Length: 559
Image (cartoon, rainbow, N blue to C red; front, side):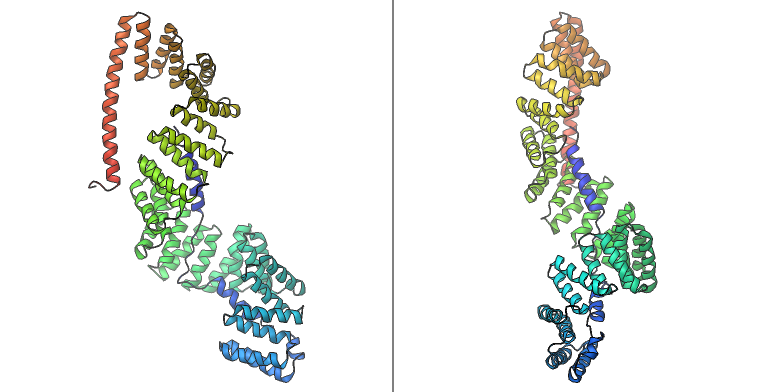
């Protein structure tokens, strides 16, 4: 039985894993969150607007200036005291309420800040700084649509408002709308074209928005700005990797590794970039070093396992996937990957166990059920295999080949009525599938419906005249019909294509016996016994070798 179910699952999972990049910024804090906070404070206090000086009385103006000075110095308690004095001196001032909101926000009192921003926008519906701050708070609350409305309102009043463009770009980026995100970051850069922080934000989405040349220019600007700063280079490399530019990212991560050698985050991301470039030997080197520095993260072992699997190094793949599950046993895909390696080496019980864990964690995932069905089939547990194929069909009836597998498994389990039903359904959509036609003929022979067997078998042979198993079933049909001369002729054709087909020699012995040709019958019987003895010896040796190999794999014997 071909391993189509497992192959399909492997492709699906490998694709999902291959292009993901885990970004570890534990040590490197030059990130976009910091940029956003800086821009909020830099541009959204609203104290530089004309209304701040023309609409405030002297006491409020003095308190406001003091609050700004204290805020810039980081003295939040003093800044709050002064801002409250400004509000008390000018309670109808949108500027004063907005500044108090900024101070409270900086102090980590977001909800109090939100109240002040709301008050400011009520007092002055066209005050862009307060509108922008209110939008930012809505975004942080998860009220994305309302936040977008606020930022768009800001831009209607002030089309060049950098922070509003930045905030909209961030929201669209997080939503995966990279074209819109890139456009807003680009608009912000028109106002401040040489700002490396805006360039970094832009390039993080520009590659995915098919604006590669602009992204490369932005990357060059950032690289010049950060120069030899390891944190800045790491952040730049991460943004470039997110855009799928792994060659460039790998070069930058390698440069960071020279500046700050033996750092887990750098080695890990360098390894991932190389992995995505199919440079697996180099990737394994850096990932192994990362795992030595910090063996706890499951992702490192996962990547090492995937690399080992791609090299057909099943022993190391199994070891690494076990490490993954020791760290995180609650992800179905991890159990699937270990099960797949067990499957590849023929350890059916192990494969079934891991696939079952995957199914238990994600019972609606047809891929995992199909994989287990295949493992049950290989083990020879036909009934369990058929049940799993039926379950997979219920979960994903759109699979074009599912009836074939159901028919094949039910045939092996001896459920011939069900096998015939599924094979017929499959053949309605795939009328020239040789295997399905042959299986339908086989089922008819086993059920004694000889008149129904000939048509599908003959059609299979028209499509594939030298298909030995189908020729053999065609010969069996003649034997069942007691047409021994025709059976002998067909069996000779089988042996002409496959001289060591043991069962065919035995059936030909029976045919010659019925035809009362004892000499020919004796020749076939002798050959059958010889081949049968060889097969039994070979099977015993293979089973013994398999047992030893699996025991070694499970560390039950010395290596």
